[in-house]
Amino acid sequence: MNQNIAAVTGANSGIGKITTRALLQEGYRVLMICRNPEKADAARLEITQETGNDKADILICDLSDMSQVVEVASQVKQTYNRLDRLVNNAGFLPDGERKESPDELELTVAVNHLAYFLLTKELMPLLENTPASRIINVASEAHRYGEFDPGNLQLERGYSASKAYGNSKLFNIMFTHHLHKRLKDKDITTFCLHPGVVNTGFASESDSWFAKLFNLARFMMKSPEEGARTSIYLCTEPGIEHLSGAYFADCSPKTPKTNVATNDDACKKLWEASEEMVKKGLST
Ligand SMILES: NC(=O)c1ccc[n+]([C@@H]2O[C@H](COP(=O)([O-])OP(=O)(O)OC[C@H]3O[C@@H](n4cnc5c(N)ncnc54)[C@H](OP(=O)(O)O)[C@@H]3O)[C@@H](O)[C@H]2O)c1
Image 1 (cartoon, rainbow, N blue to C red):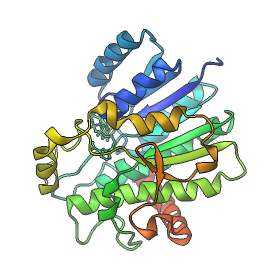
Image 2 (cartoon, rainbow, N blue to C red; image 1 turned 120 degrees about the horizontal axis):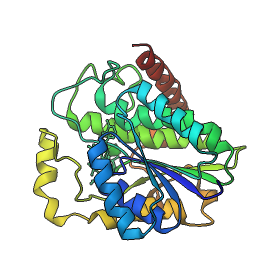
Image 3 (cartoon, helix red, strand yellow; image 1 turned 90 degrees about the horizontal axis):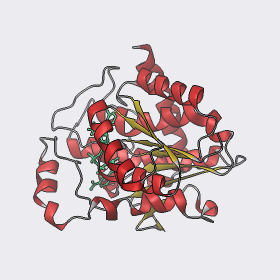
């Protein structure tokens, strides 16, 4: 099996669906990691017909459940012998009221950060076995609303939807920064990105004021095709390996809005705390 393989989370909708379509057009086999079988089937049918490439395989996983993340990674490792691109894309805007995952982790940090962290870790053997593999993490400019408070990563205090979302997207950038350091002797690169403000399924199910504002502004937003451009660029552009660890927007490296996003000590602390949170989740 020598065909290039990519895995995309949240591949049935929005930016993930367009990224999947582009990778199929580039000749990749794409593993669509989705939580809803009906939505995944419908998206698969649409994009395989559009591209004429039917090599899209669906793997079902609710990324809020850490044991399902381990299970889906195990299925990938048993079935495929390489992984050229891992696109951690699935994410959501939470409600105004704090909720917990089945593992008793705050839901936003679980889906938007810990699933990126754990899936990457579990798939590392495959990524290591594949020349010039890349890990792409879809973050957001909303990281500017986040803060790194090691004593309150689960937002037991001071919860709001914008804080929970902002934190999770800040953690995507911090995760990428520290991951790059850990990968320095390996033939693997990692990038994160802001896709722009994009008219997708995003925020359509949140009851927060942040979602209400977002939904009012839909007419001004990028299309999903425009919003997926930086993800596709980071998957396909040759010669960007020297930029590993960077945060991108509009297909160019950018400086994150807060210093903590690239603070070595803070990023290492977040990594260690993420290991603990995942361990707690898996033991619940
Ligand atoms: N749209 C924007 O303006 C914007 C801006 C900055 C960053 N982003 C980021 O872009 C990424 C993609 O979002 P999008 O705009 O394309 O939104 P979207 O159309 O709502 O797509 C989100 C995808 O994530 C999946 N997902 C959510 N929770 C999941 C879970 N627990 N388990 C498995 N899959 C789950 C969704 O599955 P279902 O279809 O089953 O719900 C969907 O496939 C997110 O990380 C988001 O934070 C978006």
